[in-house]
Length: 138
Image (cartoon, rainbow, N blue to C red; front, top):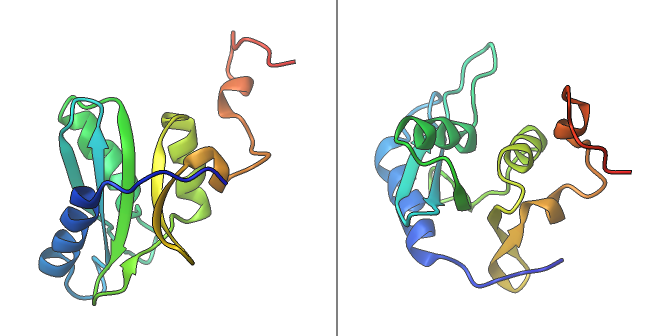
């Protein structure tokens, strides 16, 4: 696994959003992402019996609504001081599809590290390969 230094400001912002904005069972996770232009975009999940988006996916949509179409790094933090939480499988796939070069902050035995999203989802399905007029990777 390739690891890199962590964007601590990003982790701190996500932790602050989790502490202040996550209340009750509807919002239990916060996420923050650094856009290519340096901006930080935050969001919280929206739990609902029908499913609902994870905090990471809320950030992807919020970033696009703000004109930030390229994200460099993302982190999710749980409420009640749970700390950094890795993305679920659905988020890993979506993040890889949207931002193949994205780094994700995760907790490791050696502390927080930023790892390529592709390291979190080896041998993955490649969404682009199954789109009309997609170039072949063979």
